[in-house]
Image (cartoon, rainbow, N blue to C red; front, side, top):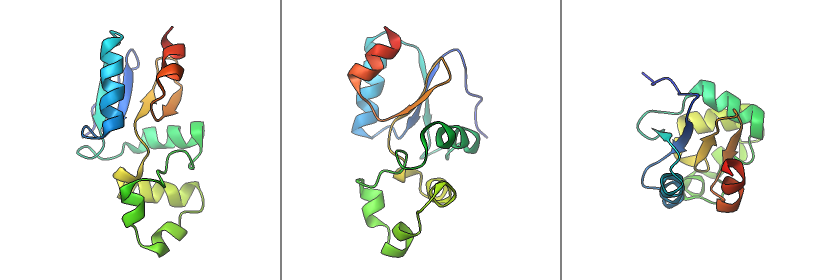
Length: 124
């Protein structure tokens, strides 16, 4: 069962051993910003949030086509990812294919990946 997301703190979604997620979590801590971490490798991809991400960002930025998980997929599976519905199905089945981290900010907006300058402008 998924814990409820706390709208009064930043929620970071990802996998704890991902280097980019580690950098993002360290940066949030260094800024003194409270955040929740949701490990979608252990807890699964929260479908409600995935719908929000797809609406906010579209499917293309969320599917990490440069990552190991994508490269290990067979060609037919990769070729079948052509729209939001097919990408959604893949992300639910293979959470590691999601680009990380996904951040839900206090204002309700969503970003994917870690860009220190962009994040700094959000919290300044």
